Length: 458
Ligand SMILES: Cc1cc2nc3c(=O)[nH]c(=O)nc-3n(C[C@H](O)[C@H](O)[C@H](O)COP(=O)(O)OP(=O)(O)OC[C@H]3O[C@@H](n4cnc5c(N)ncnc54)[C@H](O)[C@@H]3O)c2cc1C
Image (tube, rainbow, N blue to C red):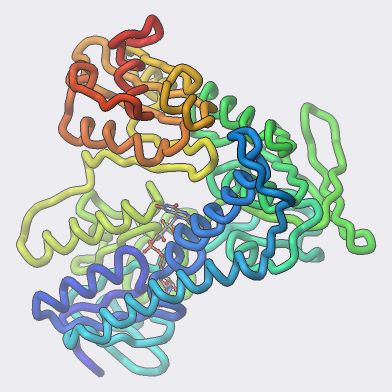
């Protein structure tokens, strides 16, 4: 039995920084990782997808270059080279993470799968370890929908679709959340035919319909076929051609494609942990419920990142690590309760989103003011030739406090940070309206949405 001050299970976006910081603080830490350091984000999520999306954008711009008066010639996408560029970047970032762990003499990296044998005792590769503090950061993996015949056909998930070296002729994507949207546009820009099947009435189910429809329009303009209100029910492989049966509007349709990508949600990595030996509760989907200090029902055991359910992003996982670190080392009493959670969809136009949608705000009973400004009215967007999308800002009509915003625009994921800052500081929309925005920038559209010059503003 080896004893540590702390055990961190999973070297992902919360576990890795937490283990390093606890080690710097002088705590002895066992960091247990069954696969690669950096978890989903680095190895099969954020970083590889955004690297591939960057290549896809270059292909798109090269094809469309004549619009800017530039003649680039025929475009050829070399998927092996595109994938190599992505692999090189992922490897180099991962090597940086491994070096950080190596340099931290208080952190012992144990490669293997952790399994509880008691509340503060674990088994890894037959080795017994224990610690008074245990931090679970085991993340999630792709969930598979109930499509009849799925187990009998070759299909891709968000991980295997990052390894293709031959371009799909016709990619069928099931799932219109942010992962499905990003892959659909990326493969379309690489040169595939793409059909996107979404069960909900519009893409990005949690988003306001006007935002989702504007994104659908932009994707359709690029030649992506989108079926909404469509449920994939069955699939067969007929001599190498996939046939996907879809129920839409009460009727059945059969879609044909060369490849199928399932982009339909995530399930937690808790099944291998033997949580019952520790008495740790899970919900009906296997996520670990926590309080707003990320404590599980068992004293001295925390759950961080995706495995606790709730918002599942790298920035929320990293913030979990900050909250827990401050609490366990400084008794800081921090909580995740009131944090302002943003996210982005790295489509083109990008969607940067923070806070409540208009629909959520109304459902919660707020009297709302809504400011809106279209991309084609923003001088900088017109100069860039990238006018798709619009800005939408929602404020509380009684207090003028900002409630939420969506920036569906080129660089929307960057521009939204102005709104994130404002909401973090509990600002009023008038604070943003009355500050100077540089002309000509995309962010200038925010002041227009807030009513500086526009009839459409708040
Ligand atoms: C395709 C895709 C694109 C994404 N893009 C973005 C994005 O642009 N922005 C964003 O914010 N988020 C994005 N995400 C989400 C983001 O990747 C996750 O929210 C983030 O990685 C969660 O971090 P985590 O630390 O909770 O879990 P993970 O990063 O999944 O890490 C968990 C780690 O635990 C290890 N593990 C699991 N079980 C055990 C065990 N029993 N023993 C030992 N080790 C174990 C795993 O091997 C893994 O390394 C994306 C996700 C996907 C799939």
